[in-house]
Image (cartoon, rainbow, N blue to C red; front, side, top):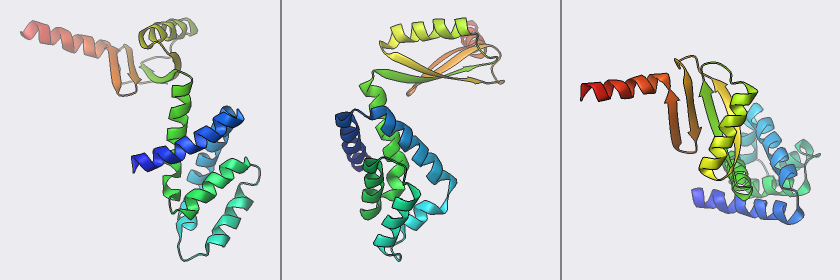
Length: 175
């Protein structure tokens, strides 16, 4: 299943790259994902086999009139192939490809209190050095932290929280 999603996303990414519209495609795909997720029954409507395909495709044209024609065609293709329920995953994969293309890593940074601009800049600099990539950081406060920060980068966790430090100290003492 992941391979099929990857193939669809790769095809769309190729079209966007060839036309030099990677950002425009990414923005429109994100907007499309939001719109469809707000209208819960829309995916069900597009995947309903009892409705004529021509009716479902016309509904796509009407709903996404202002969107790039290649994105609308992509949505129609997923509908025609019975893969419309994979749209969200295809969009996520497209955006992952865009990050990889730009040598960018998105990280989530959790702290007890909001970080200052200076702290954010230093953190971005250190993470850029560590990963040898551009860093796109998303900051969130987490009141469960006693202090320090936790960073999630992909499937990696960097735990610099006070709680983790105390746990490590406890393990050393107990040995």
